[in-house]
Image (cartoon, rainbow, N blue to C red):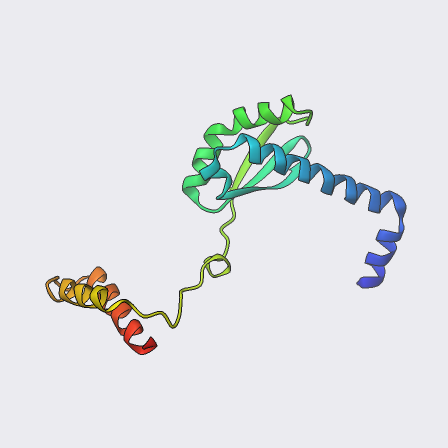
Length: 144
């Protein structure tokens, strides 16, 4: 497999087209970053460009819905900035949460906060929130 990749990259035309596509994607990403509302831009990214269509991957369905509503505006913005763009396609491409968030370990709660949370949990009916508070208190106690 690496031999075919080496041959492909050795072919100046093939490598040149890959590099040109990569530069185009970088340009599209910059345009998108400057055009999309910040909260939507942080939860999505330009993924590809095919046959005049910009493909955007959204982290979740809610972001995808908003971006689909904005698709004509985004396509117009790409066109204004010199990219031949007939439309924008938005796909949900969720990313692994574990890549971006890892629960803290080894942290203890301040004594006052621990007591207040324990009192709060004791006065609550059984619920997922109460279980979450109790789990937080247990983890904090183990970290001490």
